[in-house]
Length: 449
Image 1 (cartoon, one colour):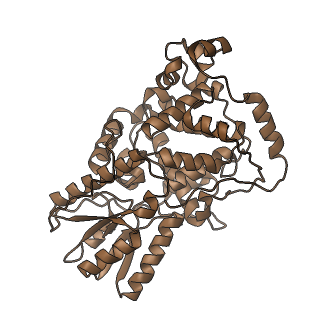
Image 2 (cartoon, helix red, strand yellow; image 1 turned 90 degrees about the vertical axis):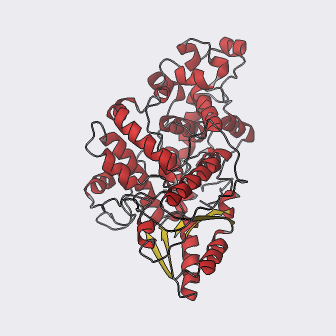
Image 3 (spheres, rainbow, N blue to C red; image 1 turned 60 degrees about the vertical axis):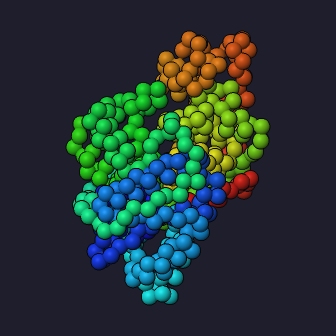
């Protein structure tokens, strides 16, 4: 069995199928192309390494042996399969361009070697393509997908195996730099986080999820991205709990975007709906956005959290994305690529298509939607706690001054003035958006994810 984004022993169809054989070997490959793509920050790599270590311990506790290699993914898989003289190979399906190319190449090689290749569900609760609107293809609007997804028959989650038969091997330790403040990767930690959150916080999730300083979101996204926990198991455990519907809806959003990517894998870098936007590019402005020095407090707080933690509250993700696209008029791909370089939970489907939703080129029905950062702060960070936590220059100010500091206060505390005027920049965006110009993009990120 080759593990990819299914780093768990609970509810893992590929693992259960592989264990039907008399002897089973387990492999994970740190894919050199992904590691060099720019999509892996040190924090994300640390999380992955910890997830592999946790998986290895879980397999060892059952008598199993996880071999870990680093290099060109296909070549390393071929070498290991040849070494153990495998007759069949099991792997979880994945849906990005790169994952599909890897699997196609592996299937070609397995066919030439008379090795049976089996791909299994497990990345999603409902397989992409299982649900289709009346006209066929993918669902392009979330609400009809959500209704169909809720009613869709789902397989029964599979229990973890009881025993395997092999000793433990060590994992390469030269890949990561330890950061004790980062979330711990692995099935053990993900399961603990899931159960604690379901017991303590899911009941208030709908009322509190938009307030970034309250820390009431599940923090499960990294574990879902790497498959440390099964989305189907999460759904089964969350169902029928008080207040769980809003949380389950977020699971469905992940799968909504995954089924779009499965049908349109180019949506990671190509407009899902071509609006004819013409983007501009200003390095000074883009660098200010990346570093959190735009002079717009809620935007800067979000970007500084992203850079320091590798995580970012969903409401703030939308605010900083809206600012880059609608205020600074920069190509959404620039922001999407930067997010992937920093986020521990960076996921091609969710990241790219959420950016497109904000930019107006995705599934949203209002392409000119704009999130005013100051208005958002007054609604969702009323005390200025989130802003004051992440912007030291503003930490001693009163809430109103932290949310929207005057020019005199900015000079006093050493905080910059806004790099653009909100209303004027939005007006310019909407004027340009009405022109049917050929889209110009200045940068396309590497789609090795």
